[in-house]
Image (cartoon, rainbow, N blue to C red; front, side, top):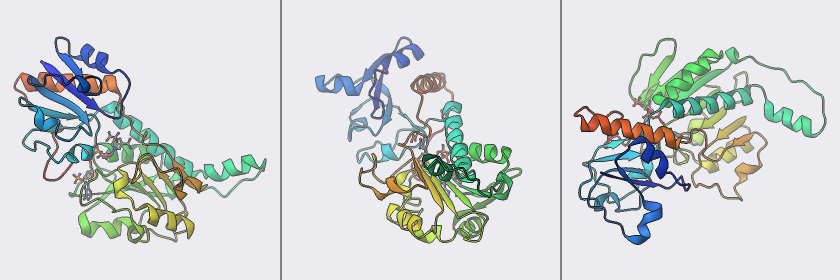
Length: 316
Ligand code: NDP
Ligand code: OXD
């Protein structure tokens, strides 16, 4: 009846949320208990974010692995991961809505040239700029999953022209879609603001590089903008920096980085047209995560299928 927690992103006391969501179960928070070498022999469920290497493999009765976030790349880093156990990722309206808030904020910040106005404000300068409207701007979403699709629909609702790209072909009412390798160039060719909400897999590692950025149109209403809240491993930061320096990119918004925390001496900090946030676009809410895990365990124990199971071969 014990549920193991190893959520490295959350150092506050979190057991109470899980205890409240699943009365009758014992919650073992690895961060607090590991020094005392606790008995792990009856653990059937583990809720993890970048678990200690080998920890999951050391649980003899483990049945289900829950990811503390929507992404699961941090779980695949464990070289001893028991690949025969289902991995359930976190899919929740709380997280999805937060991500869409962040994406809409970034698109509007670039559309409304807010960073330039911030500069004018510092100089006490009263000056207006020519201002396109959202419906002039073509936003391309890379990734049309739980997060990409919600953001796409909300961006469309506020007037942007929206289209998307995914691994498998999709039909989405009101949104033009592209897929796979062949769909990439036509997708990029009509993208003024590129929003990446991709999982990190071997295929998406380093995908946001100069070659890709140069395929964004330079003759649009505004210079291309790159917005990434998927994973930092998908972006090649030296390329992004050089594209900001030579004007191939008009701006970026980045929530994720190749190395986190971003090094204090990264040149990215210094660009006026780079909006950086510290991997907070859509943090998992612990109370929502606890309720989600409790619900899934109830389903599983009553013989129903788990939802949002990761495809181990696809890597997301
Ligand atoms: P989903 O699994 O629901 O969606 C992933 C999307 O990416 C799918 O549309 C998928 O295509 C597409 N995709 C995957 N691989 C490729 C590829 N090689 N080529 C083209 N498209 C591809 O994930 P979510 O939307 O829930 O989350 C996306 C990612 O966002 C997470 O994996 C995580 O890394 C990141 N994230 C970041 C957060 C933050 O705070 N910064 C918070 C939460 C998540 P298809 O539909 O065909 O499968
Ligand atoms: C996630 C994240 O994957 O917060 O949920 O990055």
